[in-house]
Image (cartoon, rainbow, N blue to C red; front, side, top):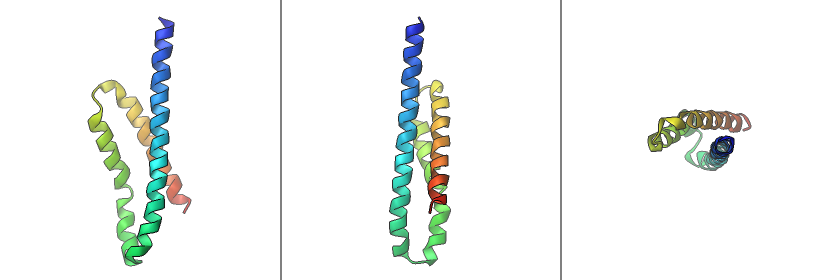
Length: 95
């Protein structure tokens, strides 16, 4: 019984870590792409696009949450979203 419990916890941990890592990678890629694209739209559009930055992780959160089929994934969902928001803040402050 302990082996099954440990196996399930290991799988859940692996899923959470993989989700957080992917979220951080894609957040970084999004920031890199936006750094490249924002200057092409001119300085006046920079403020307009900056308003959309917090909405992008929320859009990802909504899509992930809509794909979850069980209520047991809520903890993984919220941990992943915390990592996404932390990554967004980190990458935004690094600029």
